Structures are given as C-alpha cells and as structure tokens.
Length: 296
Image (cartoon, rainbow, N blue to C red):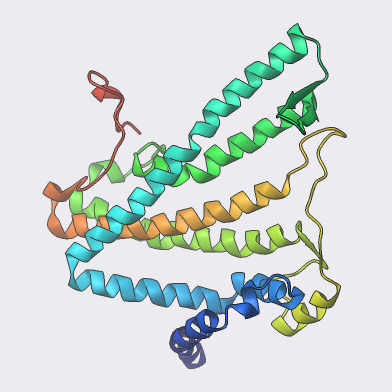
C-alpha cells in the first residue's frame, strides 16, 4: 500500500518534468519523418506518463477553481462552449447523410447508374455501394462528435429511481460522483484501449499496450504505414481506419466534458438552486416549443 502511494505521488511530481521535456524536445515525438519518433508518439499517447500529466494539470486547475469560483465558471463556459461548437458543426453530417441517401436512390433507381462521379478535372468516381457504406461514417460522426453536445443540451435519456425525488444539492452530489466514478474512468479506459486499437489499423508492426518503449523503438526499424482500407464489400467504403480515429475523439470529448460537468455540479451545489443552468448555452426550438425542450 505504501509503495502504491509513493508511486502515485512520484508520478505526479514527474509529470512536470515529463511535460517540460516533451515541450522542449518536440522533434522526438513530432518529427514523423523519423520512424522512431512515430513509435514514441504511439507509446506516450497511451502511457502512464501522459495520464499523470493530464491528471496533474486537471488537479491544478481544479484547485485554483476551488479558490476562485469565477475562474471555475470560466472553465465551465469554455468547455461547454467547445462541446457545443463541435457538436453543432458535426451535426450537419446528419443533413449530408440524408442528401446523399436521396442522391443514391435517384442515381440507382431512376438513372440506373452503377456509380457516382463528383469533381472537376480529375473526378472522384466510386461505386454506388461505396457511397452507401459511407453513410455509416456520417452516422459515426454524429454519434462520436455530438455526444457531449447532446449532454450539454440535456438530450440524453436519464433513467433513474432516486435522482428525481431527492433535493437539489443531493442531485448535484450524485452528478459529481457520476462524473468522477463513471464518466472519467470510462473515457480513460476507452482511450487506453482505443489508442492502440487505432494504431494497429494504421501501421505495422502492430504496437501493443504491453510493449515497452524500448520494444516499440526496436519495432520502428521495420515500421511502415498500413492504413485499413478493406471494405465489407469489394467496391465498398474503404476508409474504416477513420472509425478508429473517431473512437479516440469520442473518448477525449467525454473526458473533457466530464471535467466541465463536475465543475458545474460543484458550483451549482455550492451556490444553490438559483445557479442552476447558469451560463448554460442551450439551443431553442423556437417560440411555442418550450414544452419539448429540456425533456429527458
């Protein structure tokens, strides 16, 4: 137990050194013309070192926010604004998905063409099945990049037996516990598994979460890019490595918003019911549609 405590605080102390070293030696992990640099990027992207750098940074921000609540409210506004901006942008993928499906139906059923050609000069030409399978990517964009936006807007379904019946401050305590016990660990685990899952579909030799840095550097001698481009059908969508990248983006977005949710829950708990929804930028369906807004 004592060894674990020493290890924990030792890694918090080393976080400052690791961050400083990474910032002063960017060529070691950002110069991708060097294969060893790519492998260092892969290793540190899913490493204990990165976890403690982020953990320590969040601790410092949280500590300062507990002292200056105005600063914490500023963090909430920035983080929720980030979730809203990203979500509102990628929500347009839903419209693209609908338009593309309509075009596919017309091209296939009305004009009986086997492919769709777009562009000027050098056209982009793919089989109908490619465009049809690409719709999955639009759907993945909406799910992964709009999840935290939907959370901010109160659009996720909440199933509870206790939450609705307890007091305001008890609800905020439940929210704080939920962000720390469920949202953050889920996001970290998804990132840790998804990070190496993504890289195994982008480079060979395949990296593993159990590989040490030295072992990955040895593997870098034979490193080459091998993006996953095999579709479910011979002429189908061939950018499936993009789904792995979206998984990482989803984990990062959830982790970032878990911080914002914890901060908001704490501040509303401290300031009382009058602070509920403070600075919350929620979309509106328009005048007369209030009954449908904020429903769970």
